[in-house]
Length: 87
Image (cartoon, rainbow, N blue to C red):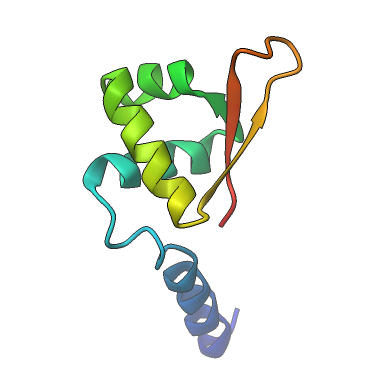
């Protein structure tokens, strides 16, 4: 990898997380956990982050406002939503 490629890769990472940069720490944590795990439910996110469910809901709403997270209904349980990082 050349120096130019390394700089370009670093800029891509910076641009990727620019929408998350000004969000609350809880939203950043939820985004990072989703980065490591492809798709999680809200309860799984609360379990992984050790955040209260209410805080996870708030973080997800902020991430959705910034179009950082995609959500869809679970086929296994239509009462649950699955969240995926979209950046």
